[in-house]
Amino acid sequence: MHSSPPHVDTTILDAAAMLAIAMGRTSDMSLGMAPKRPEVITGAAVVGAWRSPDGAIKLQIKTDGTYDGEVAGRRKRPHGTYRIDGASVVLHDDTSGLKTPVTLVHEGELEMAGHRLLPE
Image (cartoon, rainbow, N blue to C red):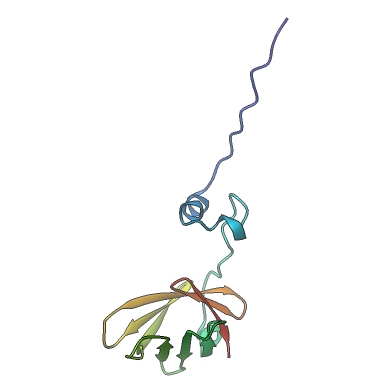
C-alpha cells in the first residue's frame, strides 16, 4: 500500500505582500496582492486642495510646484516645493527640510504619512 505525503501549504508571497504583512496592512488587501498603484502620477492628478476626513490635515498642491499645508496642533504651517517622482509626489518642506512622500491611492484619494486625503 502506498501512502501519499501530508498536504503542505506552499503559499509564496512577493516582497510587497511581505512588507504589507509586516506593516500590519492585511485587513484591506488579500495575501499576495499589493494595492494597485499608478505607474506614473501626473501633476493634474494631484493639484488642488486636499483634506483628511477628520480635518486634521489640509494640503494645497499648486500648479507652480509649491504646496501649503495645515496640521492640527502644529504652529508652523508646512510649505515648500514638491516634485513628482514616478508613482509618488515628494513634498520638501522649506523650513524643516523634511521630505514627505505622497501617493495616489485611488482615483481622487491621496495617502500621506498614514493619512488618507480627499479632495475638498
